[in-house]
Image 1 (cartoon, rainbow, N blue to C red):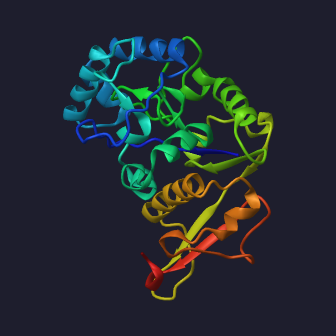
Image 2: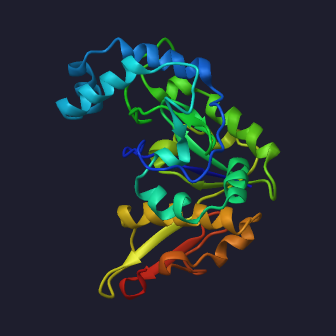
Length: 263
């Protein structure tokens, strides 16, 4: 079983690390190719490309100028401990993972990235911003989807083959990031959980903020509990969610929550 999640925009390179474990990213040639493209852009060009403020554009211009190989613990930190967005707050690796959990996560969790392609949790990552949906022109096309082509799918297939448990890819990534994967070429069953919330007795619907946290919470639960089959996913009850058989399909389990159950 392999889990895929999205990265986050917010980063932490200051807090103390709960583990010394780390690994090197695997798609080094592709990473460097994209860094070289981005390093040629001015802050103004980055602002237009990414639709960000001048301050953020200048920060990321500086990041691409400073980017260097090899990756070391001085210029990078493990990806799972660098991202701090809602998915990672829900997962809470710093607060809940043991050393064995980090080791297991390395086998079963993958982070999709516009710059790094496919990151393992402990892969060293230098700070960056490059969302998968960015219309970045390279020698391979006009978008990061065309740049990565089949590479992300091929890497996931290799990782699925080596992962423990059932031959299943659990898609807990956003549509933007899972768009870099070619489902028809994935050598596994794809299961995509959905999280719905009801407020004041109203209809159940996806609330982005809560859904991101829930994806992270389920990822962390799968890792800590060593879940190895799609069938076992229905047992997830984190953050007050519960499995809803009526709303679910075989490959699309649905979890619902009422506002009174929020935790």
